[in-house]
Image (cartoon, rainbow, N blue to C red):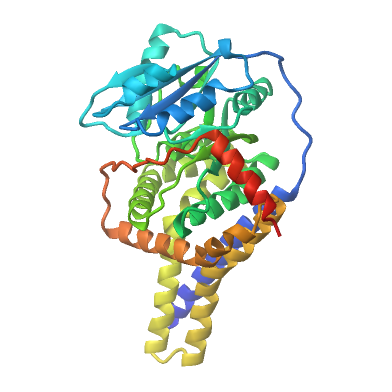
Length: 420
């Protein structure tokens, strides 16, 4: 029985220290820093790369939003990788003005493989670009995206994540959950770390990479979460990623629970793959470089599945102590409430803080806020499931809504009117 008490106290301390660290870092998002000075003044040349698998319904809207940028139209090209398409994605993308590369590979189907296939060709051509952007086909892009990313490049940033907003936050409690999750993540993780010299992470879409960064090895990723993998490899190498709050890309999220479950399961499996592949290199880099940025990378990778498992073990230990009469019923209930309630209800409080700070309308998101514990709770179930069963095959998320950038602007104006 004594070893259970020791294990319980050790787990409590581990979890407490971890969350105190995370909360402390999050507070750094409140710090307003001066903008970095420009190292050079130049209008760079860019590639906008859009990997697309059967996206004829939405890819044109993204192309149109890219064509309507405030940046010099002569200084960027729009490329669509029609990846194993069986529809008219290639045809409609060409008609919309994109340069289309068609790829067929029935074995290697993920976005990481498509990017590597395309970029290797551009590297071999020694294509005259300074940097490239990566977008998902369902995205639409704010008109100042390229202009603001060019500024980051002029400031000396090599890899920069843009602000991934949601273009359909009020469609369902699922899309609201995604929106709240990303709004919170952007401020309390990415912005907070960027403010104090730590490293944000790539977030799947709407990011920029200096072309020289990938010339030695291409887009060399293997996991289902190629964005996280690329980020961790940069951190291991001691390279900090950048963050651009004003480079906004709008992403469509699944409306239904089944598609959301499938998508988040794939993300969780990708995190587990990165955990297996990069934990040791991150620890070694921390030991060799002795930087907080490397340590923060270790804590990130340990903060997903390992901390979830630690919490489950802590709950189990409490029940074992109760079964062995080392804990009363009241103590058991108190401990379970102490561990479980913050997991589900503290995020609501945090989300409201973020929405107030970012001046987002709360009233239209009330239903989403009330359902947010259910959204996070389902993610915990996904984590638990993926501990034992991991589907590694890529499954397409269907995007069929015809949402244009003008529609997003109109909806935001309407939401502004509903602010409380």
